[in-house]
Image (cartoon, rainbow, N blue to C red; front, side, top):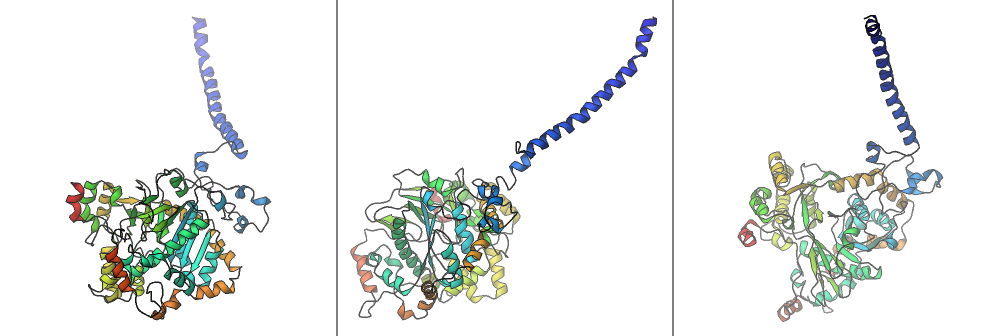
Length: 521
């Protein structure tokens, strides 16, 4: 009994000692592990989740840390990477130490051609976004603001950008194009505004094909500067990766277009502020499209405000020709084309309230229902032109809010759930990264240090603005023979003689509700 009593008497101190040791272990072990993790991270051996997804590592698929950031301390002060000391902004795999000249080592080689009068605020983000996509060469047919000395000086300083001014020499050369003696574009000749632009774009595309062959390009695509390629379905978010997977027997790749759906009336930078887009008919089930057509249209003439037939990339090859601004063709064969199921063109249309008046100021048509048909191909453009020409500023803003701005949250959520509206953030992320990396400011600063040559300066001044002041001097869109007689009669004769060649594809609206029975049968 005494032994049992003695054993029981000594248990409490043993329990207290064990508890103290356990408490000490639980205190020391986390501190030891934390110290060990700190040492490993300091030596570069461990990456925690926060570091892994920080801007210094990967902000978006296709972006990576460039070696110039790791070696910036050993670079000379003249290196572009030192323009922004201490910056931790991400770079992109297609940039080569910010020199932006990588055309020789990309495959396939992709070029974009455009006809533009936009300023740097729109053009620079558009160019560098597509550089991120893997586009190596840009053929810019410029006039207006884009041809001004200050803007053209910057554009000419960007590697891979070729600036073509709308000079008298250019128009004389385009007046000799075989297009004028063919019928596929004839129905667009001798008409104002959008029709004249359509002809001009086609003539520019024809010249761009020649330049694309000279530069060894594999693919060419025509885009406006309010359009961005969205290469969905590719691991690297890359046009280069997208087109490299196209079978060799395919001549043309069609990108269905998505249309911007703005949610406010005070947007300043559409590429950085717009994230909601309306999907194309080609990327929606027919029952979803037609079943929600009226709600998605919101009282406008069509499902899209403007065109709905997308844009196309063409393989650069013999006998290639444009087929209007939206397609390509071939003089010797019918092109083999495919339509992409995920990738698209993002069209930022009427994203700013000022777009109403800017379109009005570009055309001299009368604001009547009959006369606007001469100027515009699409119904919404016609309605917008009439409003901009006849309404007060307050009335225009009210009309803009009712017909363009998406303010009904319940309707937005319904159409997002249906898949008609979609959130696409990739362009916003890329634009923000480019801006924070200082790409735009560094290009402008670099161009400011150079002087534009006298010859290029004269060409930039001699833009279409100057030649268009005297309508009698216009050549490319008002072709006149030696005797001063219009060639309209000759064009009509051609139309009668040869109707076997299909007409150029104009901007077309998506299928309307009246087509529901046809498309669902």
